[in-house]
Length: 165
Image (cartoon, rainbow, N blue to C red; front, side, top):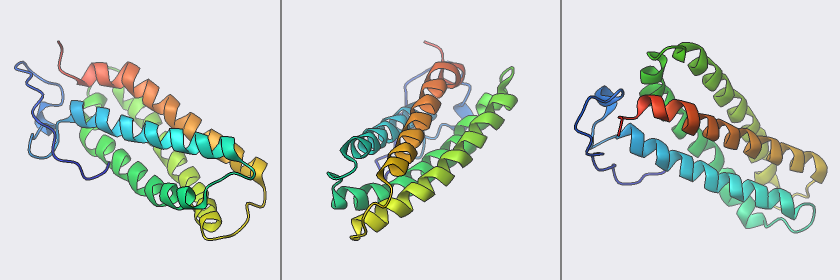
Protein backbone atom coordinates (compact mmCIF):
# COMPACT_ATOMS: atom_id res chain seq x y z
CA UNK A 1 0.00 0.00 0.00
CA UNK A 2 1.31 3.39 -0.85
CA UNK A 3 1.72 6.09 1.71
CA UNK A 4 -1.70 7.68 1.77
CA UNK A 5 -3.22 9.68 4.56
CA UNK A 6 -4.75 7.52 7.26
CA UNK A 7 -8.31 6.48 6.67
CA UNK A 8 -11.01 8.44 8.41
CA UNK A 9 -13.06 6.45 10.89
CA UNK A 10 -15.70 4.39 9.15
CA UNK A 11 -18.39 5.78 11.44
CA UNK A 12 -19.77 2.40 12.41
CA UNK A 13 -21.30 2.60 15.86
CA UNK A 14 -21.86 -1.08 16.70
CA UNK A 15 -19.47 -3.92 17.46
CA UNK A 16 -16.93 -4.49 14.73
CA UNK A 17 -15.15 -7.81 14.06
CA UNK A 18 -11.89 -5.97 13.44
CA UNK A 19 -12.54 -3.19 15.94
CA UNK A 20 -9.42 -3.98 17.94
CA UNK A 21 -7.37 -3.32 14.81
CA UNK A 22 -9.23 -0.12 14.00
CA UNK A 23 -7.08 2.86 14.86
CA UNK A 24 -8.27 5.83 12.76
CA UNK A 25 -4.89 7.53 12.98
CA UNK A 26 -3.30 4.37 11.53
CA UNK A 27 -5.70 1.83 10.04
CA UNK A 28 -9.37 1.37 9.43
CA UNK A 29 -9.26 -2.18 8.05
CA UNK A 30 -12.52 -2.11 6.13
CA UNK A 31 -11.48 1.10 4.32
CA UNK A 32 -7.77 0.30 3.98
CA UNK A 33 -8.54 -3.13 2.49
CA UNK A 34 -10.63 -1.50 -0.23
CA UNK A 35 -7.76 0.91 -0.96
CA UNK A 36 -5.30 -1.98 -1.17
CA UNK A 37 -7.57 -3.86 -3.56
CA UNK A 38 -7.87 -0.78 -5.78
CA UNK A 39 -4.10 -0.33 -5.90
CA UNK A 40 -3.50 -3.99 -6.71
CA UNK A 41 -6.16 -3.94 -9.43
CA UNK A 42 -4.48 -0.89 -11.05
CA UNK A 43 -1.25 -2.86 -11.01
CA UNK A 44 -3.04 -5.85 -12.59
CA UNK A 45 -4.26 -3.55 -15.37
CA UNK A 46 -0.68 -2.38 -15.99
CA UNK A 47 0.59 -5.99 -16.10
CA UNK A 48 -2.20 -6.92 -18.51
CA UNK A 49 -1.38 -3.97 -20.78
CA UNK A 50 2.25 -5.10 -20.87
CA UNK A 51 1.23 -8.65 -21.74
CA UNK A 52 -0.96 -7.28 -24.53
CA UNK A 53 1.92 -5.15 -25.86
CA UNK A 54 4.30 -8.09 -26.19
CA UNK A 55 6.49 -8.75 -28.04
CA UNK A 56 7.51 -5.40 -29.51
CA UNK A 57 5.54 -2.52 -28.00
CA UNK A 58 6.54 -2.85 -24.35
CA UNK A 59 7.43 0.55 -22.90
CA UNK A 60 10.77 0.33 -21.09
CA UNK A 61 9.97 3.16 -18.67
CA UNK A 62 6.65 1.51 -17.81
CA UNK A 63 8.60 -1.71 -17.14
CA UNK A 64 10.84 0.12 -14.68
CA UNK A 65 7.88 1.78 -12.98
CA UNK A 66 5.92 -1.44 -12.59
CA UNK A 67 8.98 -3.43 -11.53
CA UNK A 68 9.78 -0.89 -8.82
CA UNK A 69 6.16 -0.84 -7.59
CA UNK A 70 5.20 -4.50 -7.81
CA UNK A 71 7.03 -6.15 -4.92
CA UNK A 72 6.82 -3.29 -2.41
CA UNK A 73 3.08 -2.91 -3.04
CA UNK A 74 2.35 -6.63 -2.81
CA UNK A 75 4.44 -7.06 0.31
CA UNK A 76 2.86 -4.06 2.05
CA UNK A 77 -0.65 -5.25 1.18
CA UNK A 78 0.13 -8.81 2.25
CA UNK A 79 1.67 -7.66 5.52
CA UNK A 80 -1.41 -5.51 6.24
CA UNK A 81 -3.76 -8.41 5.50
CA UNK A 82 -1.75 -10.91 7.52
CA UNK A 83 -1.23 -8.65 10.54
CA UNK A 84 -4.51 -6.72 10.66
CA UNK A 85 -7.30 -8.47 8.73
CA UNK A 86 -6.50 -12.19 8.78
CA UNK A 87 -6.40 -12.53 12.59
CA UNK A 88 -10.00 -11.28 12.81
CA UNK A 89 -11.10 -13.52 9.96
CA UNK A 90 -9.31 -16.54 11.46
CA UNK A 91 -11.63 -16.29 14.48
CA UNK A 92 -14.70 -16.86 12.28
CA UNK A 93 -16.00 -20.40 11.57
CA UNK A 94 -13.67 -22.08 9.07
CA UNK A 95 -11.49 -18.98 8.99
CA UNK A 96 -8.18 -20.59 9.99
CA UNK A 97 -8.09 -22.93 6.98
CA UNK A 98 -8.99 -20.11 4.62
CA UNK A 99 -6.33 -17.84 6.11
CA UNK A 100 -3.73 -20.58 5.59
CA UNK A 101 -4.76 -20.82 1.93
CA UNK A 102 -4.65 -17.04 1.46
CA UNK A 103 -1.19 -16.85 3.06
CA UNK A 104 0.02 -19.58 0.68
CA UNK A 105 -1.33 -17.54 -2.23
CA UNK A 106 0.59 -14.54 -0.91
CA UNK A 107 3.82 -16.54 -1.04
CA UNK A 108 3.11 -17.74 -4.57
CA UNK A 109 2.32 -14.22 -5.76
CA UNK A 110 5.47 -12.85 -4.08
CA UNK A 111 7.64 -15.43 -5.85
CA UNK A 112 6.02 -14.74 -9.21
CA UNK A 113 6.34 -10.99 -8.65
CA UNK A 114 10.07 -11.36 -7.91
CA UNK A 115 10.62 -13.21 -11.18
CA UNK A 116 8.56 -10.72 -13.17
CA UNK A 117 10.22 -7.71 -11.55
CA UNK A 118 13.62 -9.10 -12.52
CA UNK A 119 12.53 -9.50 -16.17
CA UNK A 120 10.90 -6.06 -16.29
CA UNK A 121 13.92 -4.36 -14.74
CA UNK A 122 16.21 -6.02 -17.27
CA UNK A 123 14.03 -4.91 -20.17
CA UNK A 124 13.68 -1.44 -18.70
CA UNK A 125 17.47 -1.18 -18.60
CA UNK A 126 17.82 -2.06 -22.27
CA UNK A 127 17.92 -5.86 -22.42
CA UNK A 128 15.74 -7.52 -25.01
CA UNK A 129 12.86 -9.75 -23.96
CA UNK A 130 14.32 -13.13 -24.83
CA UNK A 131 11.09 -15.12 -24.65
CA UNK A 132 8.00 -12.91 -25.07
CA UNK A 133 5.64 -15.88 -24.86
CA UNK A 134 7.05 -16.95 -21.49
CA UNK A 135 6.95 -13.40 -20.12
CA UNK A 136 3.38 -12.99 -21.35
CA UNK A 137 2.42 -16.22 -19.61
CA UNK A 138 4.11 -15.08 -16.39
CA UNK A 139 2.36 -11.71 -16.47
CA UNK A 140 -1.04 -13.24 -17.16
CA UNK A 141 -0.59 -15.87 -14.47
CA UNK A 142 0.26 -13.23 -11.87
CA UNK A 143 -2.47 -10.74 -12.65
CA UNK A 144 -5.00 -13.56 -12.97
CA UNK A 145 -3.99 -14.94 -9.59
CA UNK A 146 -4.11 -11.49 -7.98
CA UNK A 147 -7.57 -10.76 -9.40
CA UNK A 148 -8.93 -14.11 -8.19
CA UNK A 149 -7.44 -13.51 -4.74
CA UNK A 150 -9.03 -10.05 -4.54
CA UNK A 151 -12.39 -11.39 -5.73
CA UNK A 152 -12.29 -14.10 -3.07
CA UNK A 153 -11.46 -11.59 -0.35
CA UNK A 154 -14.25 -9.26 -1.49
CA UNK A 155 -16.81 -12.06 -1.67
CA UNK A 156 -15.88 -14.12 1.39
CA UNK A 157 -13.48 -12.36 3.72
CA UNK A 158 -14.63 -8.75 3.80
CA UNK A 159 -18.32 -9.51 4.49
CA UNK A 160 -17.26 -11.51 7.56
CA UNK A 161 -14.85 -8.95 9.00
CA UNK A 162 -16.62 -5.72 8.13
CA UNK A 163 -19.10 -4.22 10.49
CA UNK A 164 -22.70 -5.03 9.56
CA UNK A 165 -24.81 -2.37 7.88
